[in-house]
Length: 187
Image (cartoon, rainbow, N blue to C red; front, side, top):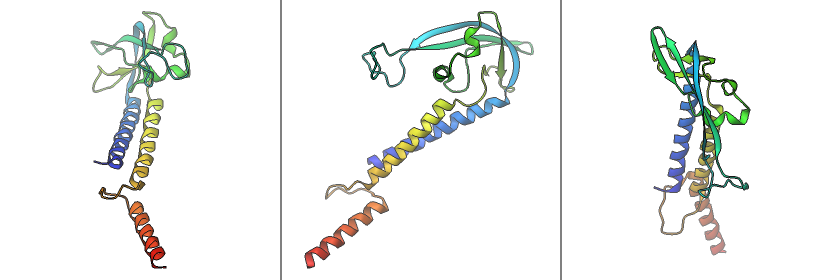
């Protein structure tokens, strides 16, 4: 399999992942609101994507860790009690930090929070509804970049003797070059 096909398949996978994340986020608008109680807020530090193994980020002298906030809460649906630590559908706990403090970050244990749960599956609950736009747009941009890269790979001339399934544009370029060489040779 050549690089053109690999990049094209990867772009399709990333695009599909972005679409699934957006669809899941939009599905959360059908969730029902109910009152809940905050059990506690776990604060942990994780290494972000793109951090070097040595523990330093690019252009920074500080350790490459980011604080992740994970609020855990309980809520009741009818006679059943449920617990969850999910903020949104997606990876919201990793992407909400750039936009400032969230409402539950200022709360203490046993405070009331608004919880949104799925009607048919009351065990699935979130604190915020809507798509995770940061990750979805990042995946979509990566898919577009890989698609453009796959076109570059398809247009690259391969050495003589190597057969690839090149795009129409690359075949046309080779045919034009051969015609020019024949014309130059006949003069």
